Image 1 (cartoon, rainbow, N blue to C red):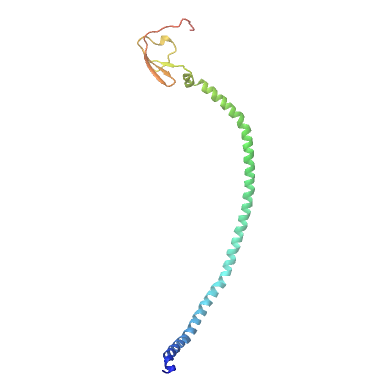
Image 2 (cartoon, rainbow, N blue to C red):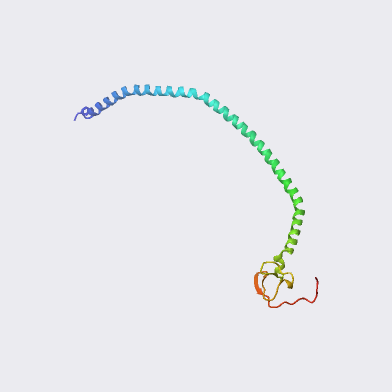
Length: 167
């Protein structure tokens, strides 16, 4: 029950660990010094490269600011020209649009389909020629009558001439 014998094994372990630490510590310190020197030499080379890169970056930044200012000026100029173009085009197009609308109305009025939609019809003989007078057909001939929504095939039963003579 000697107190020294109770801690004797712990003291031996402590001595062994102390001896190991005494030998490992200088080796680790030397290794860390070597690494630190390598890092320091690498960092001493980097500032020159960083300075060159920084100068290039500043040059690009300056050029970008200049280009941005030029782009802003051009954007304003283009916007003003677009406004002028809209104003001039509306002044030029309004009479032209009116003229086109009038001509479109006239064209519609002259369209054969518009004529058919008002109740008129177009008669064609068997060869597809338009029948303009009763003498173009004879009893028994077939012909086609085109109306607004389609065509009618018919046969001439009889012919009746108009009493007025315009020819």
